[in-house]
Image 1: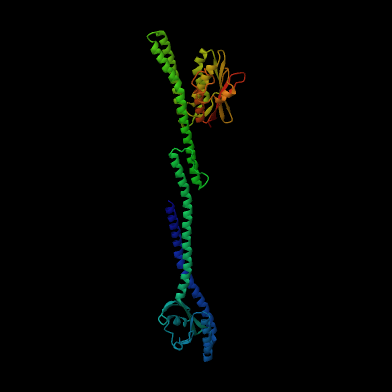
Image 2: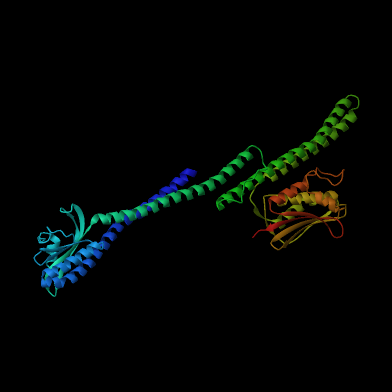
Length: 462
């Protein structure tokens, strides 16, 4: 990935450079050529202006003056100069070529055109010099009369050499740009792949069972930091789930050992007494049935707790007030048999967000505990209250209540306040787990006037 990313970035940079520099190279050639032609035109007009008087008088002295002027221009780094009279005969050349002086240049198209009063510019191959030349030819005018022409020629190779020098600089810059793109791509891809390699290494450790490892979510690109945070959340969740499973298995094995041992002992006693003491054997069988029933209750509670822990069911909108009234009606016959009054207080409706059946099971567990510990003649109140975006449900009894240290442990699995307490210690643990899955909170508080206030607070549904 690292080298592919670097190569792609360099290729993109190269394409951008080529798209930019190839047209720029052609444009530079045109600009350089036009610059030299413009410079030659300017110099040619200056020489024509200074040659006008000498060509008009047409004396040898005047010819010597313009010849010296052409030589000075040539010596100063200018181009090759040819000055002809109105007939096209060369009067002056900057190279002191005596064979050329006096020769007719009328066959040169640029000379012929200039002698008609026009400016001639262009590029042609010189058979005499055996090279490509840029030329500019301007007429020497005095009013409407044409006394001759001035031609300046410049080697086209100079333009090519100048252009090549500039293009060399341009392509060196382009090459540097591509190399820098490669370096930047290599550094960037190395940073990304280093983070991914560390994440891959951490994933390998996690797969090997080292659940304590975590990815570094403080360095790297924002997307990689977000990926590392998501990985850490997954690892923590996995660690928590496995810890729950280990704890569940440990608690289950511990809690099931006692009723299974008791059941085995009861059955063994019944088998021994079945021939000698049938009545005693029957008592042992009844006790064994009770132990089997208690064992079944523990297993059911463990299964329910396991399902609530692993559940990721979506929240639903339910009417807590309607559910509370329905559960009060369901438990009312049992409460009347125990001599306990049971009533509901609250608004006609109260919408909450909770997982399916969570509110029903929480209320059932609270009422089961309240009826177990409420004396005859007392009253249990199920009450719902709405406030600040939440809905609270309270189950208020008039039983013995619980000291603060017991209330702090009551929602733990298999905890029972008294050694001889009824139940298997899973009811309130299930309540706490269902509330957590619903985003709710549970509390046990003293009821004013005596008794216990078992409550759960749900988020109100919008």
